[in-house]
Image 1 (tube, helix red, strand yellow):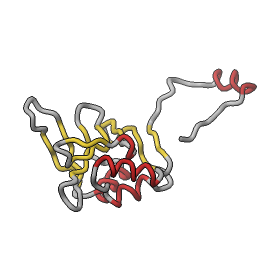
Image 2 (image 1 turned 180 degrees about the horizontal axis):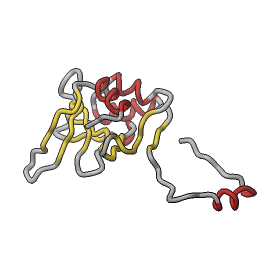
Image 3 (image 1 turned 90 degrees about the horizontal axis):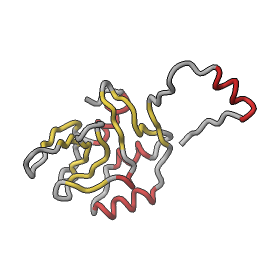
Image 4 (image 1 turned 135 degrees about the vertical axis):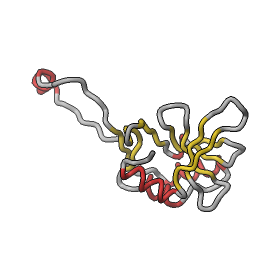
Length: 144
């Protein structure tokens, strides 16, 4: 993660010139190591889609922020969890109770939006046909 430091001798001037509230618009992360993917895939018992790996191992990837009117957080492999009878790999959320997941029971694995319901079965809505289409939507800022 990139951090910017203000030298102590410049701090008073910096603070005097701040206008308004500091707001984090979006967070991007650097490449994810192979070892993190290997650990996550061992826990899931299945590989994550190759296009997802390419995206998270690129120069930078979208971690969290607003996409359209929705706050979205994407998880690195170490935060990916299994759900839905082991065929769903949760890769993020939409800032509410809904989760973004790969449906690993299909090849290619589509990305779905999983919303909890009052029954034992969650409401599952298709979001993208595969990881490549999902990444394209994230990068365009038009996820929903």
